[in-house]
Amino acid sequence: MASDPDSLVRLLGGRTGALDASAPGLVFVGVLLATDQLRSAVLVAVAVAAVLGAVRLLRGRPPRAALLGLLGTLASALVVARTGRAEDFFLLQLLANGVSAAAWTLSIWLRRPLLGLVVGGVLRQRTSWRRDPDLARAYSLASWWWVGSYVLRFVVFVSLWSAGQVVALGIARAALSWPLVTAVVALSWWTVRRVLPADHPGLRHPQAVGAGQDASEDAVQAPEPH
Image (spheres, rainbow, N blue to C red):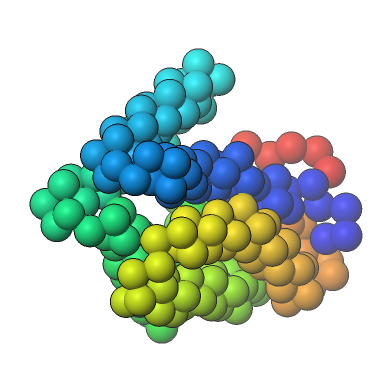
């Protein structure tokens, strides 16, 4: 495991995506402070989200990520247009973090940790990792770091949103994006490495156990030499 190249840092990196996600919020706050025009702030934020989405596509990133980023900003803009409250630009993000915390907790309780589903999807393993008790346990324990990050964001956002602190919301959105994501990814990988036995072949090679298991079920992976 010490030399396993498939660390979660590589698989879930996410720093660029997190920066892209926080940019519209920062722009929204900046334009609002500069112009005191809520409509202008919303329009510029949407424009920035559209540009970032286009850049993602040009760089060959999955179109789904670009589309979701733009749709999220558009949805936030619609909420603000309806309520007329600047702090509501961050309302959907607040709710999304609450839902995410609940979903990740439920997945651990059901013994289907979302971290395993995400990494398994990236590695094209489907759910073969679930037949590996060591790997399933590692993903379950590491998933608690993600639960904690969503709970932290939810608590901070609720406090600031309730107080109408728009500027602080924008700053918190950025501060709790890539720095927190980077820390959680690193801690998740550290947890996985600590939990897996020293002789475990790594994330790309789930070890199926039990009678009747067919080794070919794990052929959906794309093994790479260590």
